[in-house]
Image 1: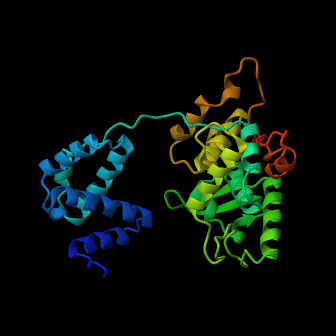
Image 2: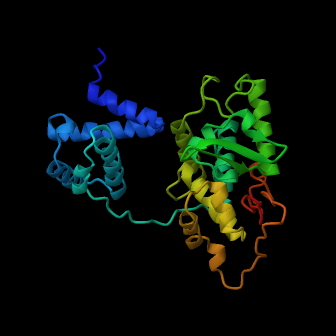
Length: 317
């Protein structure tokens, strides 16, 4: 039997819907409020400032990370600020600093081996997009066939993080890889006209992020890569290899869809080519034509010795 939604919960849902919060954000905020109610043993709108302070101490004792604490505070802040109109209560909860860790990246050879080790053409193409265009996992599975613009050589990323559309780079090699996947999938009836570029078992549905994560973990095991591999490591590698090619950091910021430049600047600390004495490449100029994946991700499947990430040196926004 479905449990009835309380008026308070419905009000919060309505508050989030009218502000067009993402479904994942809505689910997370509701989870944080449920956690508060469970801690109190009574309705969450009866909480006092001291209750909220006690909750934060409890979560710290439970081993919550700084990031987990902060997202909990953000969800409760919405509840008390917007839904119950008692913003003053949140003064007793305090966001905590989040240690900033350097992103782990793959070498060019590791990226080539990882992609070549994917279990099927679909997953090889999906990993190629994540690395060759720097997309997040959710953005990869959200691509449709119509998002591939071969005329302008870009990928349209609809409603990426922060509800923002943007364009990502599409190299000739990546386009060849996607065309090969499209021809195979169309012949097998796996891709619908104008449908998902990477469909799930039912072509009406997109491939799931969990499935993509399982595929990359399996590929990492097969390729014997001794790093903590995730879909995001391909995005990190894309940005780092661009920086090593002397691409302007503001261009990389645009390609990644970063709101803040200092987020992109973190890759400068892991770009090993920049730290090697005597190594010099021409600086990027915004008026130069784009120089895309020189060897090509698709070609690296057959020629693993090629530099997969010899990515263009300049790219206009």
